[in-house]
Image 1: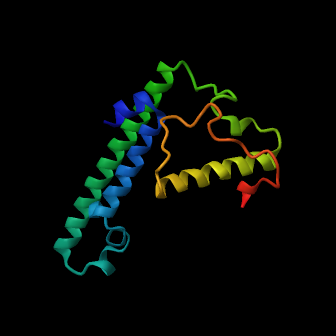
Image 2: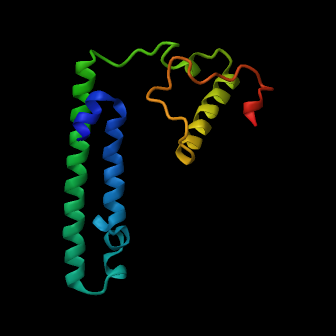
Image 3: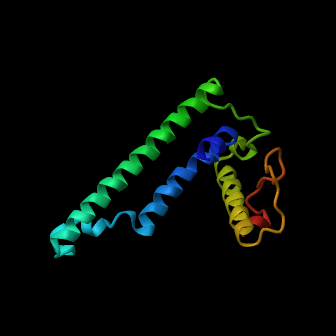
Length: 143
């Protein structure tokens, strides 16, 4: 699924990081038992289990990294290099003043956070000027 998601949008590749984090959180690896095997676990049979689990986790992580690099290389080759963005695709990146660009980016980040909390105005594509940029320091959206 990550390969198909990355074929349509670059964000699909981020799912590999989410999967690795999920693997750690669900108990795929106990970092304390791996770093301090004698202090964390007194039972020698548990130490062998932690070692096997750590090796299995390392293998899964290596496979995810390998798949991620392969998919990324394939996507760049299909696109014939890195993407070239214009002001229509990412207007905030083309704001002349550094501070206004920074404020525009933070306005977009805050809007995205708000959409996570209250998704009442979702859109399939937020490019092409659909979010007005910050054009002055005294813009009320800066608050």
